[in-house]
Image (cartoon, rainbow, N blue to C red; front, side, top):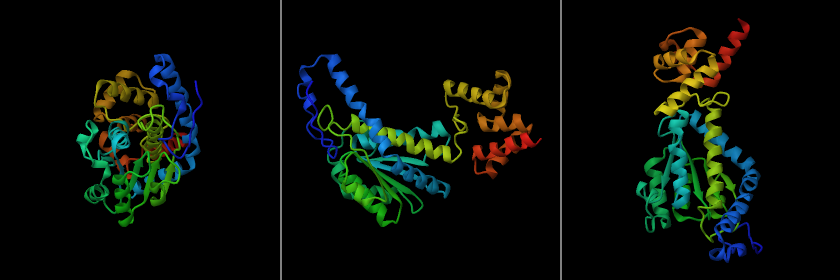
Length: 307
């Protein structure tokens, strides 16, 4: 195979390895894709200090009653919507705590909306429509110059909001506009300009970090357990019961009974078992700690140790 001519500042740079891609065998195609993908975690690792700043700011905003908004177009927009939509079932948070807004609206999740990403005005309008003065806005754009995203960030800046940008180029317009730039120079794609590949993978990794670490800091995760999980299907109901068992040591039957008494909330079930209290008392304890289960358990463990 030929060498790659990569300029890390441009995801559309010529990739000479893939110039004969149509002549490769199936195995050669996926070997090349896999080889290219190996660089993504290394690039993301290099951006960890910047990602940390974004997470700390997002946590501060959400602790203060604000919300997190992603704005993007095409693949970037879809990834933002995906990450936001997985927060309620995973972490038991309100559906509007983390929000993904895509250029062209929800129809753009399945179908291309011609010209949607080219409108700065539309991005600014969507910010003014959805975002309040308590919130944080993160723009996602592989190129770092998508007009819709630029318009959204400019509007957020006018509102005095903290802003972050996730771009797959260095020194992009997006990076110059935001408070917290995250740059992921993944270089040329196997299929030139197809930012659903390495660029999309890098963006997804960063979004995973932003919401997961934020939820850990907000007490929505205890140890490595999804203690705020919403038991909306059989798989998650079983996971809820296993969480209660792991944290209390009770039998499966007891865990099922207390989980039902707690309305499917594993945190309530755990507190009922460990503190030998009723449902209302367990909920009151959580409420006093702003539903930060990690903080509650810190006191519970200390009480048990002292007792």
